Image 1 (cartoon, rainbow, N blue to C red):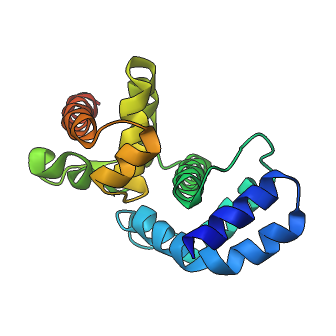
Image 2 (cartoon, one colour; image 1 turned 120 degrees about the vertical axis):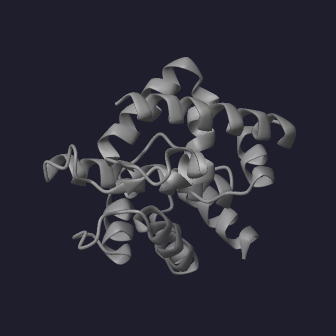
Length: 182
């Protein structure tokens, strides 16, 4: 299946719009899994459901023209980033600055003992981290939002797994510090 997905992505790169139609049934289940990961720490009663998040992400992805898909991992990492943007836009549109209900705990483990952090603050912290260290910010997106393993993240970033492990520890510590200060 991975080869089928990669082949269809390459066809889509070359402008074959029908490749996208053939691709979607192959990736829909995985996109829904990603959506559930993104929504797992949202506040109760969140108006977006996994299918709606997938649909919104799909609408944004089909209009992106400058992405050259390398493989399925690249596609799902990009989809995860788009889902994050959808949720941040949704939170901003609903004035959720202090009420988004995101749990920091999965990002920095139990360091904050379950303190609630809003999605807009988390997004801002990741943007700040990207200025300081773009790879670490990307790593957080891949590990936390996309749910990739250390090895999968290393593959996407083109670095050693040991580098990912070190950067992951540093990024978690920085996020702990930054989110605790807000």
